[in-house]
Image 1 (cartoon, rainbow, N blue to C red):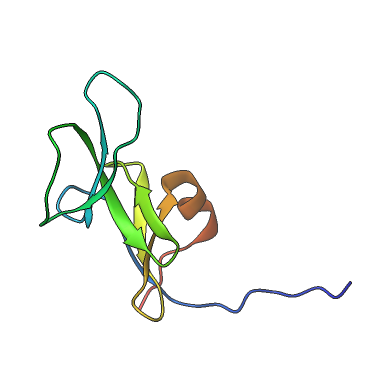
Image 2 (spheres, rainbow, N blue to C red):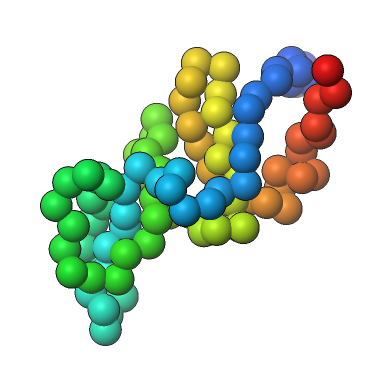
Length: 94
């Protein structure tokens, strides 16, 4: 099998903070039954809300201080866990 190296690509990223979410994952307050994902500016059920971002693959829950939000080369956004991000990416000096 041939070996390949990933091409170096510069991306923008920021440690997630409230206000960056696209919507919320919602759960009933006293149950772990999942009610679904709801857009930030749409209807939100009265339930336990967790921030989420919408990616090309669907919605993902994110946590403050736990995930970096990476913006890819085509403007797509996706979460990366802080530990994995810091092992995988290095800051670019301009």
